[in-house]
Length: 115
Image 1: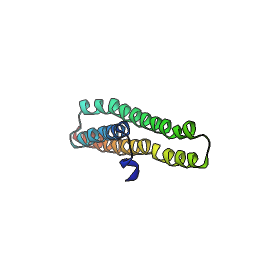
Image 2 (image 1 turned 60 degrees about the vertical axis):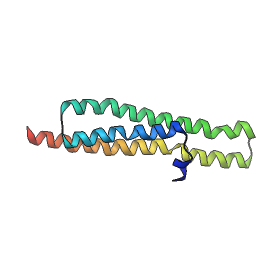
Image 3 (image 1 turned 90 degrees about the vertical axis):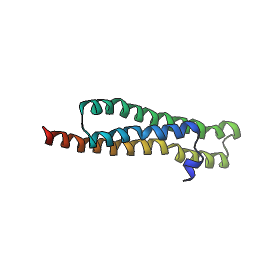
Image 4 (image 1 turned 180 degrees about the vertical axis):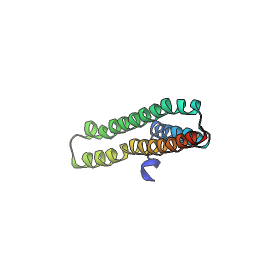
């Protein structure tokens, strides 16, 4: 819970955007339609880009101690912790997209059974 408590507003936004495709995938799994499937593609891209942007911003922020404090042991400790926290948005984003597309596969099989 620590990385989320320390997350910036932008990191929280990128984490929230990672769940948008998951919500759409749940809707598609429950009521498969071409319209819902068509929305999954751009929402998945938005989730990917949000995860990547959140991670890049995290790495930018975690490198700040190096130019503020110099190359000290304490600065490297802060950078290591920051790098670990910077990977949270991409992990959450990829996990949500994996679950999303598995739900899309369920929805596609349900749509195929109705045809």
